[in-house]
Length: 363
Image 1 (tube, rainbow, N blue to C red):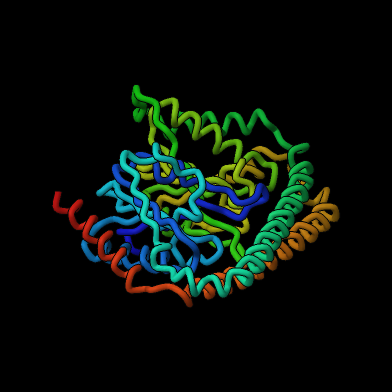
Image 2: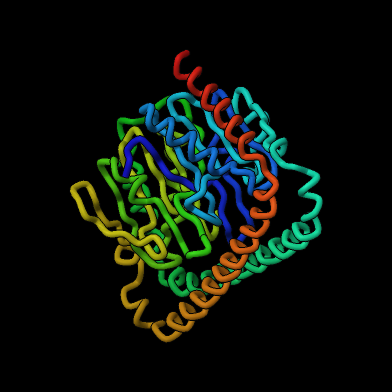
């Protein structure tokens, strides 16, 4: 993993629909370029080229991946330059207030509108199919979340909330003692993973690789993992400790990871579909099931839990299949546009942007 780059998602395919965190992920930049225009015009390729050039120049770059195709980029940030570029068609929530200066660049000038007119009915039909497939996927994830709520109830009933509160209080005291500042911080909200056409994808190993301490939270649904993280995040803000807050890719109302840069510490939900295990010094396990749950809960409800797990897996599989179908339709839409794009214009736009970043480097 390149220490010069960090990989994130700032939009997700979730049980609550398409969910965007770009307003938070890109906040505080001095300059933000927004690329507008249709799909298939080479925006992701342009972003990748700019990112590679910045990395060659020794710059740290944050890469924001597409949840439909994680190999493609939705946006980038040159961290030290405090400048970013984003595909405006997938970055809902960004406003003129997101950055000190916001510049819009319309790549639609590269599209031959006369030639595109021959495909307009086909594109409209494909977009309608795409919207329906996304709707089906989101409904599937929502159904899976409702089943997950059933799953949680078996464990919530066996939870010792007093012990969970003690664990949280001890963590707050142990993590933040001696690191408090007078000025409260503003949390930066991100996704470390996403539901994709190939299933769950996450970037936890790379995001935590350089940190001295990693706390792996183990447990069961309903064992207080997200609640613990929410309380830690709130305490960090109150005490002025910088925190990056990572939302759950299925239910963005829940949290799955916190990173405290100045403490060189991460604490995260290390259960499926992002299950990891300690493998180096500085790694430790916090088992919420063992510490705060009535012993024997798994065994007592083994039959009921097995049935719930099967239903949950089935809904997740079906929703993922709809996303895979959406990717194929999206590819057809892109090909309709790509066939009528003058890519020399896109290359010229990329060259102008590179010149802008070179000027920022020199200033």
